[in-house]
Image (cartoon, rainbow, N blue to C red):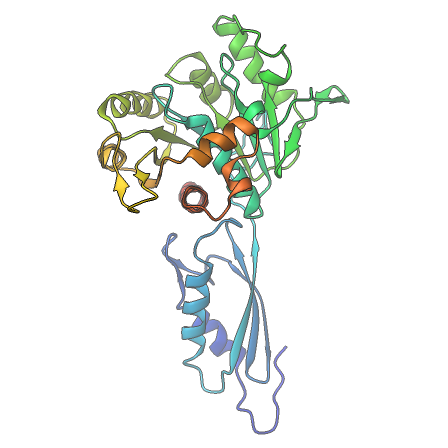
Length: 357
């Protein structure tokens, strides 16, 4: 409610709303009023307090919105200051009547054409970064033959069963399910395709995920049974391709991309892992596995390069110890890069979801 004070020019609500309507979301390319992002506006003595609802708590544009809103309101006579409260309502994938995960707003497939590119490390990093940004996050280890997520997340206990459903284990703010919780340590999983399909289905239908903003699915290498089962069982918001810079990895990443395109699964972007090594002595970037490969394949596919993660001993140590680098060293270059990638991924998901509504 607007209140006028002696000596202070009144600040009309209509003028405030008109000014806010000139502020655009840089990624959705529409103004924040028509997008319904402005949830409340209070005006008192030339001061404006408003609530702005973002499409993800990991939105990388808070400073941009603050700057642009302040500049727009600053053109109104009588304006003195603005205070912005940010909230978030994560946009949602299309959910059908028989969806196996109705409480999950977005399913992110993390894939690679080949093994050894650090896909599980990236999956763990994305899940933790999104959770640290305030999102409700789950991590599904769908690499049935090589379930490394329990070790990397520092979880060893078997899940409980309540009311006929498994309860995900939780660490670092992330809910986790893996076949590794259900087999003896070191035991091989010797299954054919139908058994893999059945297990993946159960990880959706028989697990109490609750309400999640993002479910990160760590897929096995290649383009086989698990990948096909995933896109057939649930509507996947989109896939992220993880590659290293060398051509042998890029070649397999292209194959992975082709599979997702054939199954009409959106590709949200490419992440280049092990992009370079920064020398402690000279602080230079050394391109051990080649340079620019991730950018090239992203350009070929017409999708964004979400980021380039540098090599680091701390990443390896974090994975082996069950304390990922974002937990043990959140300010290091690798952690900051992963957090930036997670924010860019969340923004890409918001844009994609808005475009299909």
